[in-house]
Image (cartoon, rainbow, N blue to C red; front, side, top):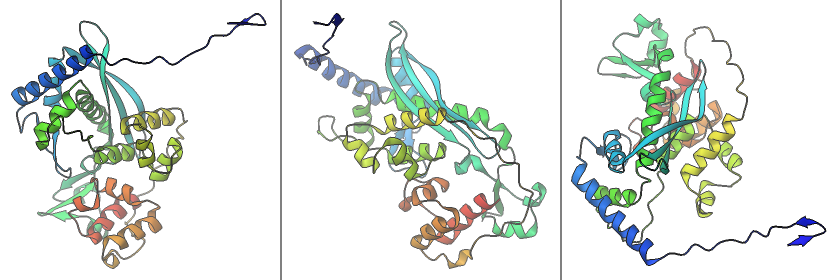
Length: 326
């Protein structure tokens, strides 16, 4: 249409038609995906349970089998990363590319951070060998004659963080392939593919990635422009989309130089840990002493919810205080 010598292009939305052929293709994909996961994946090798996470989940060897079955390979992209004295964090996007068409057929996001307990700490028989004083040793968590200390090989974890983030992104991407997600749910839970139930959000993975990005719950809401993550999901968006947006926004920020390392000193907790009698006391103490909310408390304990915590509230406070006061 012409108006005053200017061409105006009217963009009208195009309707997408769902044809009988498309429905048959979807049904075929689901059937084939069920055969793939039930006939190829081996429990304990390709999938199984992970400590601290409810239910079974897909493991890296299983995701590799699924991706290869779709004649595809992962192409990785760094969405966000931090390398400082106090934090090493990577958020990776895995794009699954078909070997024949070279088209992207699936994608996933994974994050890894040195805030995770299994990377942040190490169990050692004698902390004195690592420069800890007798007073400091009293604050350390002990088990089976060993003590948990801050990882003394912290500077060597960059490669580990990259590889772990890539593996997690690859697993997430494998589950995005046609028919695979529903087939895996049937394998893990016995739920039928056509039950009509939408898969529940993977909150454990989501909050772990939020922790890896170094964000608090209120920061997440502000950056996404919502009052809650439920509001985000109700708008038809996914947790993966949230992670991608947050990673891109963080990547646009200028990271300030890390502060100089503080001199070694005895760890003195802000309050007497023995006064922490229940989880309500724990959350209140962590909010007042360290300015962190309960989701961050869970992330520092490497769990997705309170019911997964195996330590007493007092022990939890000691762990968090030791890590944050050192």
